[in-house]
Length: 372
Ligand code: NAD
Image (cartoon, rainbow, N blue to C red; front, side):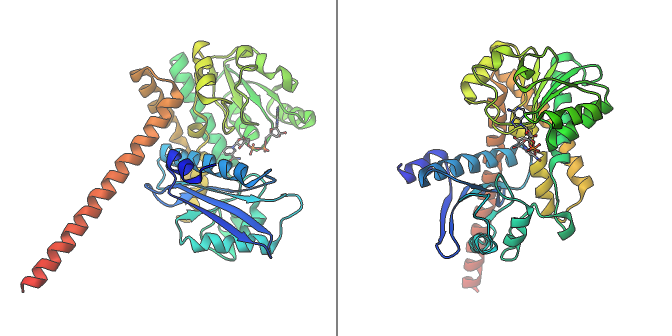
């Protein structure tokens, strides 16, 4: 892999390799873009097969965070970290405090958080070494579990989809098919039950799905049957890559709107397949941005009410994406990318203008001082 070609190609600003053999730390921090603010993104701990695989993952994920923060209207850039190791065997205080010192060394250009393979407990070790960490527990002044805020964003985003497809945003009487019965899905189902939607739910853990189904009066189906249930909305709230060659032809819905990350296995191809079938797709990183809004709030002193209010704004964000997609006759995924890029470019331009002005003002100051 030609590292610089890879970085230039995706537009990354900085990649930091962190190594401390005594602490057992091998990590990579990628800062994709800081035009809008410091790069925020979780630290993923995973048993990568080799360094190249880890590097590719961190480059891909950090870029995704830039787009998510931008579309969400946050003053944040995109970054991510990967810690190479087995999250079930290799987590120690020493390792995470060492990682925290590397984060501190970046002076606030990167703010870390929990992610796959890391939890609030490890972020509390990181916090012993740096203030540039979010997603810590409520007890320590953090934002705690982001799922309720993510789920609210998905719920209002789903309403925006209904408005687009059916002409009104009510979910009453609509059949919503939910894949996964985890944190986001559970809070989402409570909102849907409150709106008197008909809910169908599944999970690979049948007991978990049946428990959720009972609490919200939903129907349980087996995981492999979830794609072919006839309804209005399919809400992926489990895994990535589940919109693919096999699943898309089975769908009998008008809308796909859910909380899972990276839903399209191949962004271009599978977005095209959804469009051919006349299914409206809510771009995942826009509709599930509530979780990022939640941790971003921590930076200003966490207030749940403010985070929930921000997540309600996802309704308008999706509306803007659909309007652009229609105007330019482009896929909704492309429209979301365009809106995110336009915001980054406009803010970068403003910053340049002001930097230029202050430089100019500085030169004027020099001249006037010299003249006296
Ligand atoms: P979770 O682990 O609580 O729930 C996921 C559930 O999906 C689990 O119950 C799991 O058993 C189930 N599952 C896994 N594979 C499945 C399959 N093939 N079929 C059916 N069910 C399956 O996770 P979560 O926090 O609810 O997050 C769900 C998704 O949303 C993830 O993709 C996550 O990355 C994304 N997301 C979550 C948040 C958040 O705030 N938690 C924010 C943004 C995005």
